[in-house]
Length: 185
Picture 1 (cartoon, rainbow, N blue to C red):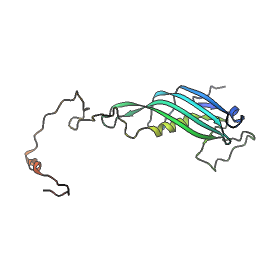
Picture 2 (cartoon, rainbow, N blue to C red):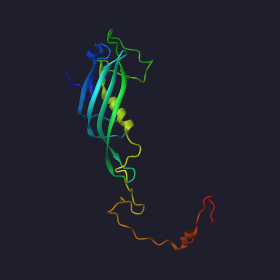
Picture 3 (cartoon, rainbow, N blue to C red):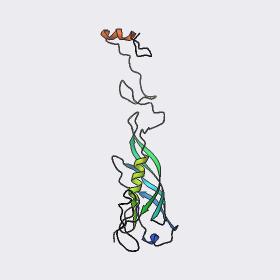
Picture 4 (tube, rainbow, N blue to C red):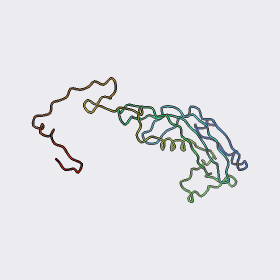
């Protein structure tokens, strides 16, 4: 018998229990594949509670991890710590009593248990982490960004640049001003 994959929980016993019965599991040091270009830099840690419902199971999980990212202002590699919560109903793909496949066409987007009544939490966790990824990640809230002249990160160690004289042919443009209506004055 092969060992179960990380974040795969056998729930056949729970499905035979009365509605409201739950199981609790700890998550420690698990790693999963993430969609797109996302990459874990810290393993998953947290807990999951699976509760029997009249249709399947209710999954409540809280998972902490960190993903690799890039600061949008200074372009440094950063770690983005995050805690995701999963609250999802997961339905069986096989009827527990008869062993026949369940017609999933009525609810095609609902998460399903495997044919062996196992919960694959990795899929739900990967989706939650992907949705939690910030649109504009920063290395620090007051990140100064990059110097427009040299491209180096601004900050206390950044040296001022010499003022470059403007081309004499363009010197007349220094006096050009645009007023609030977009008309030159």
